[in-house]
Length: 272
Length: 232
Image 1: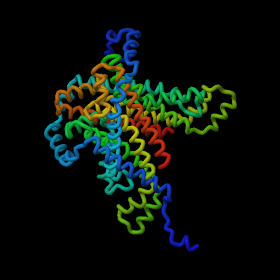
Image 2: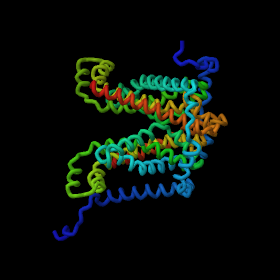
Image 3: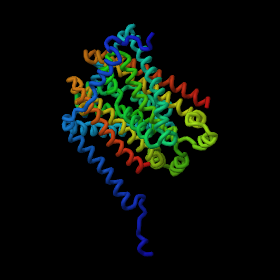
Image 4: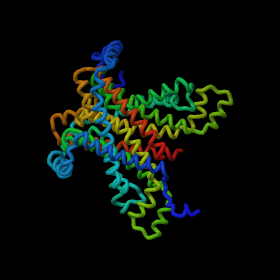
């Protein structure tokens, strides 16, 4: 009893505390090593705020609003919205089977179809949408078709993972009940899974549209149509006031889209 | 009638021509892989540093953006929310262009671009986690006479720290994808190699670079899976 008298209580006892502090130390050492390895000129950081203020006030101000209000640019804005809408729509259409096959409890065959669907989802998601754009532009040429396909692939990977996680989180009771009535897999999906997943899927759809719209504004940078093409042209010509105006238009559009999607989400929440 | 007009159907040709164009990409340039090790390491490091810097920057953004701990609600709460929305609305390529103009080409511009882009997501998720906490400990610590900062340190942070760490690790995994393409606008790493392979029309090399990107994403997913299991 005397040996326990002087012990101090700590939250993490012997092996866990070593792992915890060891991993913190390792992370910090890795970060310091990265700064040294990448040869980052830390002295540039000191004048950074001053230089940023200088750049913003002399080069990016006043933004060239007349350039944006030109008719051609508005056509491209409408094109961007159309591209985002089509990309999100087709992406969601492909998400429904891919998310279904990629969920562990509702997939038809756990040995073959589930790993393939999961790997496809991860593959679509891992490649950045800009890389999809570059590949499709080099196959299909400039224009909106490459952009729509790139956004479709991106949205499919992104939404299929979310949908698979939603389907894995449902209550299996109603599903078993409907299976007991003798329904085949398709009817089990419609009557057992769909009512539970319906609201979450609407949320996923709205979020996908939001993300697709943000990506669509810049997808034109690599030639796929939309506002990004104007951005690239003006960056290469170093017309920084016009670049500032285009960035302002991007911000305004994305704010509108976010406001709009929050409105729809509130309506869906109320309808639930 | 077409869904997407201004598609140049003559340039694309028939389906056979499109398949032939796509077939040019099929193939891996194995000789390129030794040259991809160092850029992969650079990309990985850029994403780590960018996420770390973003987590640091989002401390004030989270503090302002959460409704229950923000200091003066009518002014600071909209500022916090505006910062979050602004950082999420602008794509990382646009941020990278801006930071290259301010900081010069190289890894530093990429790190800042990723940091500023991550602030939106991390701050938004953290603010939602903070708004969902249990009010009991908050009142208890305030009753002992602590000022606002001590209330945050002793009542709020212990409750939300696992979730915030989980969000940071999730965002780190997404940042690995983003840092791979920031090289396309001048931030170094695998994006620069991708750009060069694309410009010299070495399509098999392009596939090699994509495989390298998938490789480091896999490494990131392993680390993130085991770390999230430990933290949450």
